[in-house]
Image (cartoon, rainbow, N blue to C red; front, top):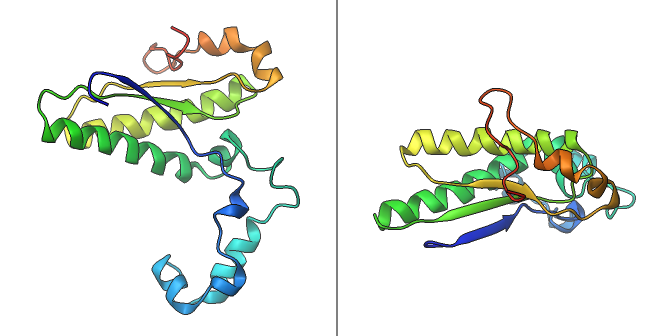
Length: 168
């Protein structure tokens, strides 16, 4: 990362590929994942995330909209890694560019961009390290292409700063 822009695309998983299968869930697994020894509660949570067609459901930014903690967790990891690098090497100049996957509307973009910004600023503040970062997207779906000019011009109403820097 040193001195280079590094674009990191947030996860865009078909969620079912990352969930354990019921036969894999045991008391130890449930306990390790914060469910105590309550295997039934963990299985119910897994079942609640099941989709009939995972390729059309909670993909891309929609996963982060429904479960904002997924976006927050990833941004925390990205910003913490950059901060760690800057602490270890005082001359380091990382520049993460956080890409929101599969947006199709201004509302989807803005939702995720503000979560990213809030989490990134939290890490910067807690660590006391000014990690430069950018937020953007790749125009991947036709409906995003129709509003790409509006996405490129988005600013955060709280501070008037751009929240889409990839186009700039």
